[in-house]
Amino acid sequence: MNYESKISGEDLDVSTLDDGDDQVRNKKRLMIVAAAVVAIVLAVVAYQYFFGAGEVPPTENQAPVVTVVIPGKKDVVRTINATGTLAARREIPVGVVGDGGRVTQVYVDAGDWVKPGQVMASIDRSVQNQQVARLDASVASARADLNLAQANLDRAAKLVERGFISKADIDRLTATRDSSAAQLRVARAQLGETRARNNFLNIVAPKGGFVLERNVEVGQTVSPGSGILFRLAQNGEMELQAQLSESDLANISVGVSTEVIPVGTNKVLTGQIWQISPMIDADSRQGVAKVALSYDRALRPGGFASTRITSGTSQAAVLPESAVQNDSKGSFVYIVDKDEKVVRRDVEVGAVSAAGLSITSGLNGAERVVLRAGGFLNPGQTVKPVVEKDQAA
Image (cartoon, rainbow, N blue to C red; front, side):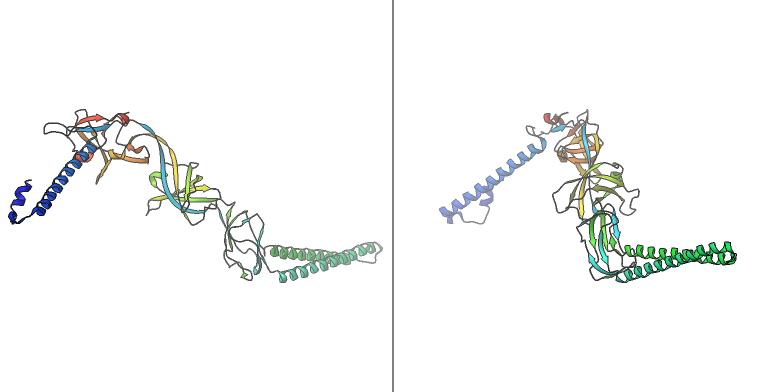
């Protein structure tokens, strides 16, 4: 660009400029020239970055030099990342088993541990105690009647040999004795039933575990229709219900080890998959893998957590991110064939690690893959490949 001719074409009277104006004009010229030089330097640096250090820009009849890598095959650990909801592995709802009544005392709260059979809440049983006393008295009365009937029968049996008592009298006394025995059994059964019902008045833990929820207070009247009073996590065991796609579910199995990180913490917990959903949700196209976890304070049922599932190792080509490109058709790389021409190769990207991207299909590992500058190449273009030494197989 001719800067002097541009300035001389302006409607300025040069004769009227003083020395200060000349200095300003010279400064402007220097700034423009410096900007042009910087732009040229940046262009050269960018070209060298994309085409590799030491590569010479192509002339009109010279093929561009590109850096390639021969990835080979490496052992790649397949890792599946997923999220899900935390829950109790075996949740036990506890409610009223007996007749219910007024709650007199609550002995446990959410966050406590309980043992099997431990009383969690007691219910007023003053009326039931009176019923037991009445039935106990009925049992005593029936026993006395039976003893009397048996004594009468024994005395009559001694007199019948002397002819003082007829056979009919013996039969009548025997029937009275049998009736008294039956009444005693009925009274005992009623007493046993009442005592058993009273034993169910207390709310007890059916299994040992961790109390997740408490829904009862002292003075509250409860009955079989009152719903769930406590929720227990049996033995404190938890689980993560991880949501996985169909393809990921197909690559895992029961017993696979996992790492679980509850949301809001940096704690990494170890678990194992103990159940895989046999069904797939028709809308989300996902299934559930349940990860068993031991109790930890960081695990709160209803919360979220992320998990890393290791589903084995496989052989795959591993490439740097700069070698893999994407468009509307998916992921692809450029390879250089035996005729030194650029060829597009569609690939499927698997696990991502510090080593790079694992290519699950599309490459056998022996190809010369363009490492950088793929965006400046076109399929069918002739290039001069240079294998990067530290990446060569």
